[in-house]
Length: 146
Ligand code: RB5
Image (cartoon, rainbow, N blue to C red):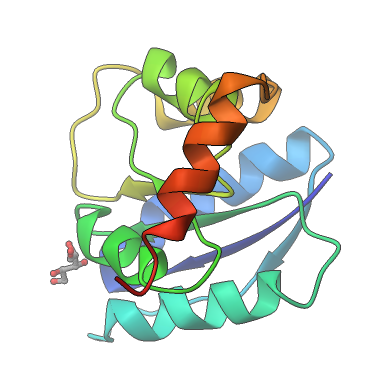
C-alpha cells in the first residue's frame, strides 16, 4: 500500500504519530510536510497532496490540520477527491465501505474518543462494497462543478 500525507502547522505532532504508525504497518508514505510550527495555509497542503495523489500509484491520502476541517474542505474542492473527516472507527470504516473515500483527514488539535491510529486502521482495513454505493458515488461526483 502507498499513501500521501500532508499537514499544516496544526498537524505536525499528529502527522509524526501517523507516519510512525504507517511505517510500522509497512505502508509506503510520501510525506509532504510541513514539519515546522511556523504558520502555513492548509489549502496549499491539500493541493500539494492531491496533486501528488493524481500522479498515480497511491491507495489513499491523509490530510491533517488543526481541526481537519479546513484541509478536508480544500481537498474536496478538487476534482475526483472524496475526503472524509471521521471522528470514530465506525465512521472511518463506513466511509471506505460506502463512500469509497480516497482521502481521510484528521485534526491535530482535536480530542478524539479513540486513538487516531485506530480510526485510520479502520479506514485502511475496510473494503469498498460497490453495488448501490457506486451509483450514489456517481451521483455525488456528478455534483462537482454545479
Ligand atoms: C490553523 O490555525 C487552523 O485554522 C487550521 O489548522 C485548521 O484547523 C483549519 O481548519
